[in-house]
Image (cartoon, rainbow, N blue to C red):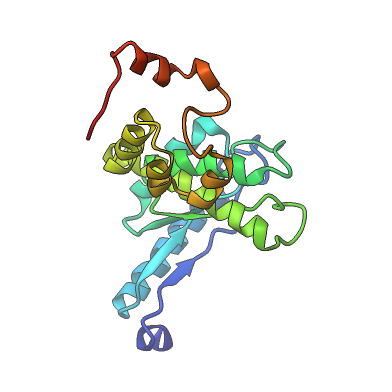
Length: 213
């Protein structure tokens, strides 16, 4: 505690009693771990050390995530850190996508910190590109979670306005991954998927869809 306080290190109390598959349910060992981590966190605070508690990680059925998060928050006032959670077991190779879905639910229900998952979860160590994919997926999850907790922010509205103007570069300014979006976007005009049948383009022609600001 003296070393942690001296260097202003935040202590993360881990979550080892996590579910191994979505068919698992919360058991006494998991609840006991929460209780013990809260006790340890209080001791650390008394010594002047900041703490976050990791919990509700692992594999949790989607319809249980929010209630598990709220249960944990009732047990503890300390910031809650979640790894995932994964709401399905069959997304091997795409666990960053499955995990970001679970993280969106967890964040919206009150989780304070998200730990990202990469595509190679359960398979091997990730390389730089897989780390990047995982981070982007969980930045999106955090943004969605914030919109649930605090309501939509101006970033979504600003991008939507740029989309209505068919302003591709303007959209890039607000995209979470501007680099990736630029690779996929056309240089001008409607998107290549819709082409001449772009709904925004057609509505503009009939004068019923416009935005100038």
